[in-house]
Image (tube, rainbow, N blue to C red):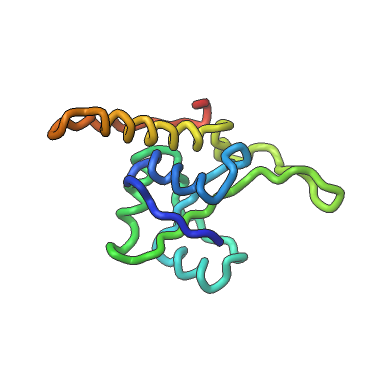
Length: 143
């Protein structure tokens, strides 16, 4: 279990926080626990959550939905990161894609790099100017 702080309340900020704890090339899904799911995770992290207690996170809108579905000022917020499992003699590799498409390879790195670029561009602007924050639509096919 690792802890990280959000730089911003969008997919770029969440991706940046996730990358401080997990290698990007192995990430398959990002889930945000909400409601009873947060309590259940703390009681038994190995117990599977009901689908109504988490949100698939793949876009700015998903991050906002996840944040708004939790009580304000309750820390920490729980994110689950599902990673690729390499094949070993004891366990098979990650199975083929289930119902929901895996995130594209390097999708999380690309989102985090968008935040880094935005921060660099923001610092280069004259005081009082701001960069418009457009929603970054992300899909499983994005590189």
